[in-house]
Image 1 (cartoon, rainbow, N blue to C red):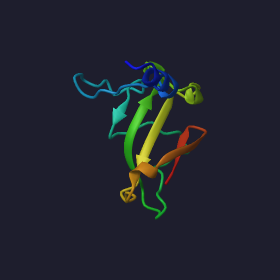
Image 2 (tube, rainbow, N blue to C red):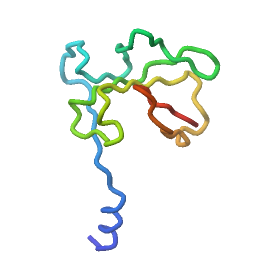
Image 3 (spheres, rainbow, N blue to C red):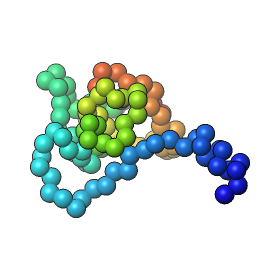
Amino acid sequence: MDNRIQEIKDKIEKPATEFFTGGFRPLNVLEESWIGRVFAYAEDEEIPLDKNGDPMMPLIQFYLPNQPFVPELIKNKKLITVFVSQYFPEMLEKWVIIGLSGNMMIWKI
């Protein structure tokens, strides 16, 4: 491989976790990650509402301690839940994480 390509790759490459679904029977415990299901809520938490005031749909729940890689920014978290609105924006590539607040990720278009 050309040295320039390797140098660029070394600068931009980031570790990541590859997430596989299926192939095992879930135990329905907190120590599992889920796609399409969020069941862990704090006592005072409810399903989040979108900008129209409609309940959002659960997308994924990640239990972080058993993941092979967790970004430094969220290493002190155990669980991340992600919800989406039924109203998708025209250009999903404009979604970015703008910060972490408590146990919740905040998304902005």
